[in-house]
Length: 256
Ligand SMILES: O=C(CO)COP(=O)(O)O
Image (cartoon, rainbow, N blue to C red; front, side, top):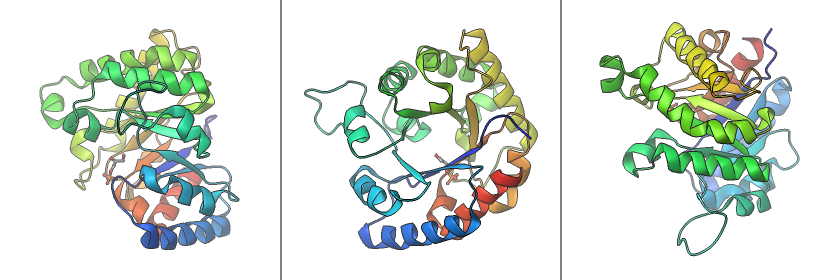
């Protein structure tokens, strides 16, 4: 039994609409209530426009909701951006930062992501900070170097954060949406490296910070992944859009 409470977060990415979401929220509510998996922290991250809808549907459940991104500044002339305080206003408990889709498609740097994480930590908004290597980087044996750079940029935020409100998500880019999952041993190796790197960087809460795995997690592979000693749950893309699949992944986190 691990000392860290597992966390399973659904990253809906840019999917959904009011009607579809309503069905998904309804199914998630009843499924998760029936399963009563209080030993798992469950988070749903819909697109920004639906955070209010998430609050309306999930507010009286144990399920938290969060954003998929946040601005790197507290307020001001930043057209189109959404601040930490706005997310707190909407009842968000969490924000994802540094997803590889934003790193690669939108050019977000590790430094920018570190700043976002620091703003979350300072305001008490939980942060799920994503790291992970590309296939080319893994094949060139650069995985550790890439993870080290990405984790180091998060260290100031992780040192400042309440360890219960800081999560690192290891998402190898080659496993995202591809159906290709890291083996449990590969995930464990990367997670152990990330934890040691945090500790070396002076993050006193490194042992308490959850490191979750993301990349083609499905009900069929969740238990073996989550059973690894440093894998503390998952960040789920595609399968989080299907209530039964997401529920079964949450169940896997409860038994792993
Ligand atoms: O990017 C992910 C979660 O943030 C993973 O996506 P998939 O689960 O669809 O591979």
